[in-house]
Length: 129
Image 1: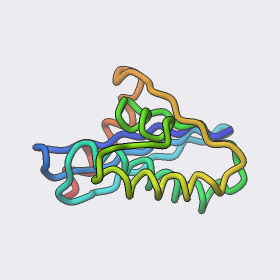
Image 2: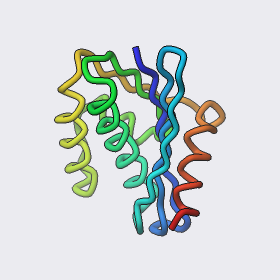
Image 3: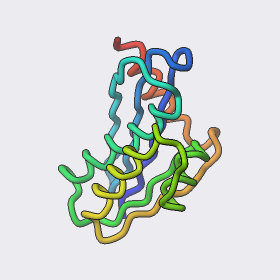
Image 4: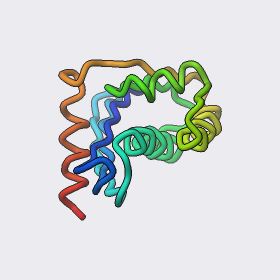
């Protein structure tokens, strides 16, 4: 099982944004920072999950994925497979499509204090712009 920590950050809302992804595999950890341009904080959170799924498709196909996010909105939308928010709908559909390629995909909410590594990577992505 692969543990994936994701976080999105925005400097302003909307503002310059970044995605941070921290992946724990068997004995090896991977870190990614992706500049996202101008986004809302919630959009950055969704894009972080999408970027992480793309990484997992390329590097860890056929693995069981256990995602963790400190965004209650993102976790709720993915778990409930539903959103009224028209901005979030395309993100949900893309996440459903990409996560369907894996035998099992789980996402769980964690407090920000347990997601500091991904947060630092997201903030680094903002600074890269």
